[in-house]
Image (cartoon, rainbow, N blue to C red; front, side):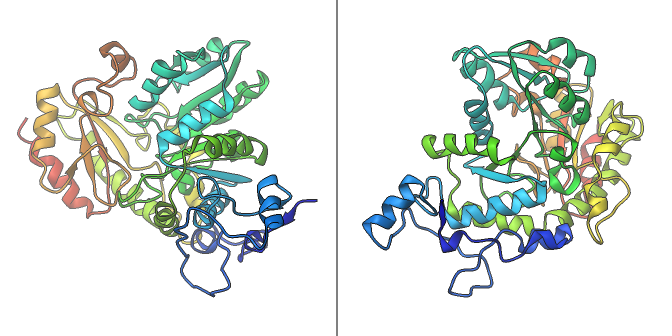
Amino acid sequence: MTQLDPNWQSDALDPSLGFFEQTLAVRGGYHRTDEGEHGEAIFTTSSYVYKSAADAADHFNGNKKGNVYSRHTNPTVRAFERRLALLENGERCVATASGMGAILTMCLAYLKAGDHLLCAKQLFGSSVALFDTYFKAFGVEVSYVDCFDNDAWAAAIQPNTRVLYCESPSNPLAQIADLSFLSNLAHSHDALLIVDNCFATPAIQKPLDLGADVVIHSASKYIDGQGRVLGGALVGSDELMEKAFGVVRTGGISLSPFNAWVLLKGLETLSLRMKAHCENANRVAEFLVNHPKVKAVHFSGLPTHPSHEVAKRQHTALNHVSGGAITGAFGAIIGFEVADQTAAWQVIDSTRVISITNNLGDAKSTITHPATTTHFRMTPEARQEAGVNDGLIRLSVGLEAAEDIIKDLARGLDTL
């Protein structure tokens, strides 16, 4: 029987006692050490000391479950993993060095040569580059469908399909996939449904509750919330996470202890921040949809959005947080279109408050031109299929006063 290292004992806060999510976000997942610290400790160590040669052997051969080497076991990283797993209603979390590291881990853990990866067209450009440039070369077949087209997903699935993968909401148009439908489709074909929940976060949407097998995060975004560090994560069952852990352990796609500590602090305020982000985004979207120079607004909170009803059904988590319920939690990423690239750049360059940067999920509002930044490596044809045209602007609505965000956008829009 495997022994348990004392520092790996059950969490100080027992989640089975039925705490609200905000309490778990502040206190869940952390084992207080013998020093009695109140704030979570940062374990900046590469290795660990054992009581004897036999004790070291037991840790390395698995007879004792405990710390081995910080490439794959670190107390601060483990605290972040435990807390995020609690918030996503998953059995286990595996942290990685970045969001792309999490997606790479997904591919290496669940795909092999001869398998088929069925993806949504609406993906971050680097994800498409990873799949098409590298995994196709390794013998993985990859194909793409519109994330919101259930019939297209069903028609494209193959006998060798092993993973269905989507972002919902997607980058940069915040399109919505029907996760319940996709989970049933995947499971009926002995495949996994893996969902990037970066834009919604567990504060708004819990894909595992909707049938997904694995949730992926770029924790660099809303989980951090202030654009300070890189980090990624996968959350799911113990069985699936053990496969992901094997990849991280062997491949070294590891989250640093300091970054894990920053992300722990981010989780403490995640639901509170997302509530404010969503409230601001709803107001900004209303301004944009009524501006005469805006051709289209891509935001699932608008009743005219084709996936509005699906989004309402799936984006419900904030309503289950004590003191956190709002009417309409649809995230805070808005895509909007103006006439062409010249007009888009003029709007972007006219801002004085909003940061011109490719990052998102920050307390500070950010704005970018996807066709020439986040998605520029895609072919023009692929960008067109993903809905990334030259007039598209992506806005990540931050925590400034909504009135100031709106005035900043109007500076450029009013001159078109």
